Image 1 (cartoon, one colour):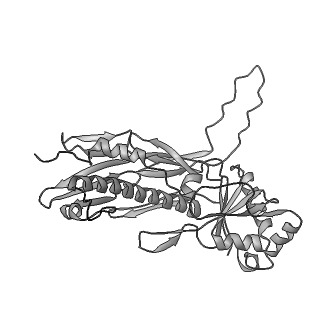
Image 2 (cartoon, one colour; image 1 turned 135 degrees about the vertical axis):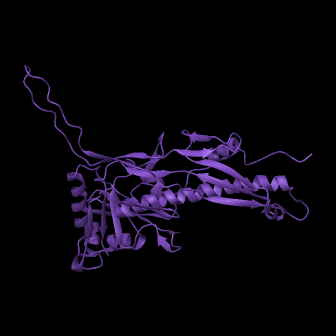
Image 3 (cartoon, one colour; image 1 turned 120 degrees about the vertical axis):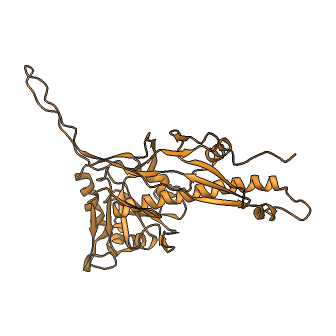
Length: 347
């Protein structure tokens, strides 16, 4: 009698997903948090701009004065479906898997289980990489671009705190004053009622230009700059703490690394010559998820998964002896306050 164990059963896949570690990525860990799963495929986006409304003075003999619900805009947006997949064929089950030896061969069922675990992990990682790309795009462009087969849409957060230096003001010029720039931009965010910035994130070369600029080194001599770590630690691959700018009250951090974009082109995680100034104590983005609706293989009825952010599904092609594993999710990062970060092109 054939072995009936199926490692691709829905409950098994969900359990595996829940056991996976969180991605060790600085942008995703530091500047985002998980939000809610909406009951529809559309997600309501409430984009807030910092504003302080004062309670009104009113005579004790008069009615209270209504305060309008202002300070944010609300839009409805349907996140594009993210659906990575991977096939499993009889050929995969015949091949020797990692860790096997000539004297210790695994059975086809054991190999299927290993492939299932590996596929779940790999597909989940690809979703995490897409979320990281969304955070990067939201931070540095103020938009989320979702383009793929059958989908093309752009979500604009109307982020306006952007600066481009030119001429003698760029940080590779002796006439520039990077610390003064950072202090001014920090105050600009505060004046816009954003969260008080405490961290500057850049690529390694730009962070080095900042810390090694002659005006910065002059402050270091006067103890206005602390070179190296100031006791703060950050989680994530490729993270370097360059120092602390006392005059601007921010820690300077660089992130190295790259990813392959949708055009199969390698892109740096942090755009070259660009910095972002923000606060790392409050999540800048909250990931919300649109509802996933799929046809159940057994009942042939539509099923709404309103309690699962990532929905795995097994597809079987008996004619080709092939089994597919798909992951379905509709993630969308929504900023908590679009006035809480500033992007500057400094080189």
